[in-house]
Length: 236
Ligand SMILES: Cc1cc2nc3c(=O)[nH]c(=O)nc-3n(C[C@H](O)[C@H](O)[C@H](O)COP(=O)(O)O)c2cc1C
Image: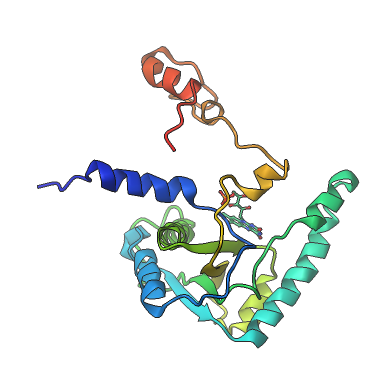
């Protein structure tokens, strides 16, 4: 028998999705209880994975020296990447707070180990990236679970993977996928910070959903859902 979600459970599920935010500031001093951190890690570990390969590992970090090294790498990479931004937008880009490495009590590196249960993994022989996608599924579980527990999470990808590998003593074949900053916060913003800052807008759903073929946005056999999508019904 299928056990369906009650209306209240559904509301809770969508609340986690729509109120999840990438958090870089607003961390407060309250430590994350081990019980809560453990729940979040369990949620991540129950993500789907190609061939059930569970190719992730989670490295928990609180050592201040490690955090400082990672922060240094962030500063270097942020300066480097700012050279790619056109002059008009550069000042704005440089003013953004894009990490909370030192302010968050827990940093967490999520890694991908392509050798786990390998070399043959069901479903990965044609699309090797499926291993990496699995790790991203785990990260999304982690992110939603953290939000459900009131814990903020910020993903920092402005980093050198080489520095990360060296600092965390990763074996050569293990790939760092995400460097995350976790901690309780005093606010979850209503909208993405980059949207509020006017950097980019959220696209309309109607512009990203196609029917049957690439770029087909008007297809009679999908009439009713097209109307719903076009009216931008807000389910949040
Ligand atoms: C793969 C990935 C990498 C990201 N890297 C950074 C980062 O380096 N710094 C940052 O401030 N936010 C980073 N973010 C957060 C995004 O900017 C954020 O998800 C997006 O603006 C939408 O906001 P929301 O997550 O609050 O909905 C990253 C998100 C993802 C999924």
